Image (cartoon, rainbow, N blue to C red):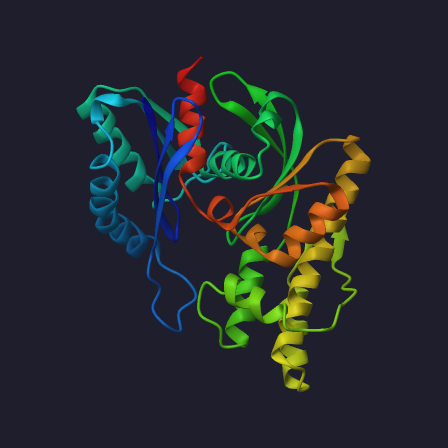
Length: 312
């Protein structure tokens, strides 16, 4: 059996994945970068150091399990988004590691953006890789990005992304982590906030601000802080936060589909592993959402894109 490697070094996770020549993800290993208790993130210098430590373990785990002679190509995410000037130092760790592996094994190296990897992984996890054959609307919802892009087929890049709309201030993942911090939840707060919100019996009709197809999310933190000061139950505060984000994503989707016409819709990124958001948006728009291991940061999408690129 032949294989393709994918590497991704985002701000909070070291990832290495393998997909087969038949397009099956056979390994998808992710090592979260540790964040000290009470902190809400990592400096880039700390993230780079932790990635270097993690990759000795990752490469041993992956390359120890497959014959290196059966690897056909290496893929890596070398930037956050597929736009000019997109840059984050932590991706240099993955790029240097991928370059070393490719050079030692005499293999081609293909570069993609972190966002392209998220999109491909979510398509795979949602059973919708066929979307890559035509245009579709994709949301990338995470701590660093909350935006919608038009995805179209492209030769060497496999998929071309064109920015359509996004949050003009706070990103969805930032909102989740900040509200989680108010509630005393561990960072990153996504899984714990999801679990807590599911304990609430309330449903909120939140009204985020829109400017065209763009949204503003900064109001959710202040409102949640106010609710807590008024003695609202933590579960209800968590539910309000997610209902607010849901209203924002719902409103963006509706506005964009009205503007673009009917298109398949994909929701990717770590925030979309949330059970409340994914269930509602799947029901309303038939949107494709992936399981958590293909929504949160991973390298599976990069390995899949590497396979697609090698075959062209």
